[in-house]
Length: 226
Image (cartoon, rainbow, N blue to C red; front, top):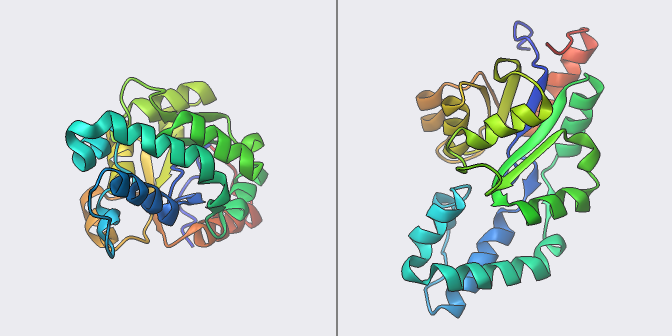
């Protein structure tokens, strides 16, 4: 156990792929858009190269001059279906409960459109866990810029030096680095070793279960936040 690590006053989480199991849904949503635009659908692991990227960059890379039409098609699809096809990541609620029991403030920072982010958090019944929720467009720049994380820290009224940011992609690790925040890496991507070497996160966990176990062990050993 990593008992030498001092627990922070606040933990901020990425949403898609970290707390919410939305990969297959988002892949399906973009495949719907691509079919409507006459583009080829994603095959195999192809969508993983785009997952978690800033919204504007993602649309520019995927849809070029048809960005506006793609956004409309995607938004209509997500509005209709997203709560039917979304589940918490295994162990996510256990992880949030562990943080709450330790008295750690928590928040969510995502490149998902803020409207959908809030709907999904409320749909899980998790709104009571979070002191700050920052979605795409809520800050001047989205991840990997520091802006959303710095905004969340201000809303939670904590210091960046007393905070962790937890995510599962290089975009999350870049965001934490740009904000001078300790990063915690959920390393379940094929490129996890490469990203871990490049960004040097404070801690690495395989999934929510293993991070929850770590926090529970901290609780049992009377390690307090801050």
